[in-house]
Length: 207
Image (tube, rainbow, N blue to C red; front, side, top):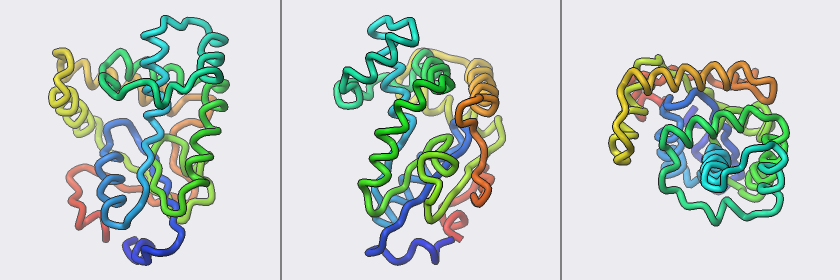
């Protein structure tokens, strides 16, 4: 795969999809640094919206849609607390709503078009947001590994105390919701390279 990334002065778009806590972010950041790519984490569109929904007590779909249209929440909502369990749960919930995804597709696609060299990660980047990406990756990992990653992330971010069992339960709930969603379900693009990211080093990944 490295040969596809070597020429740093040419246009390059990489779509990365995969399960929650599979290590997509770590991989994308490393690739972005190594190959001079703009990194876009599409989940922030949903996590920031989820945080705003909770803070503003938005309950109906119309309230959420009007908030998206009328506010500049992506710039106004801080990233503090975006990985708290309640925000994570709400993010997955609202991301399964077709009308919400349709509205948030617009800024994501605009972002993809505006950057000459970009790596974007999410759940439907290769299948929907950047279907013509030069390289498509799908990252997966065993639930045990993903549970440990997310647990360590929560502890590092000084979030509330939470058990490994609860973290695993939340991941399994999100997996089911993401993969069974009627709107842009989580799945590999037909031409994606599927990568099992258990204990894969970056040197091994580049090969």
